[in-house]
Length: 154
Image (cartoon, rainbow, N blue to C red; front, side):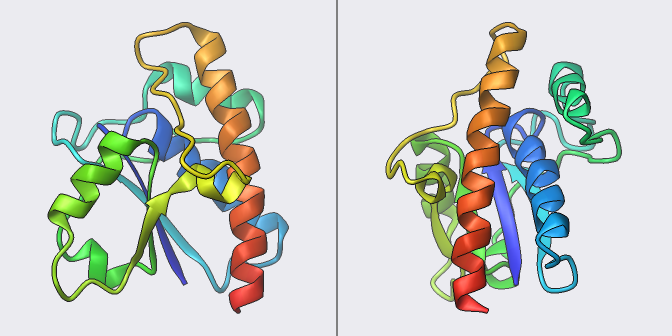
């Protein structure tokens, strides 16, 4: 099983989701069966590490994002990944715009797995530290829900 998290530039929300979900997968004993990655719909930050504020917030919860590097969503991701999950409606529209006809991925919003269909993970980039903490809370809840969903399918 392969899961891809997508946000705008791949420096705040989606790398946070990658790190949080990776820890959740390890804690669930599913690390051998689930691969995780993240990317952005834009190319502005390709090759860059996650935002320092995202890294600091995650590190306070024991999650190290420092090795992650931003990349852009590619057409082949829809063939390689089983799930392509956007952080907000704008991301979701961009995902659908790039999705090829031979798509095999299930595409949707990540927070759907937190029991809040249609809800969005807000972009904390232009806000303060509390925005990054709020994003972590949302992502942790959605990660738990996605783990439960994947357990039912395995």
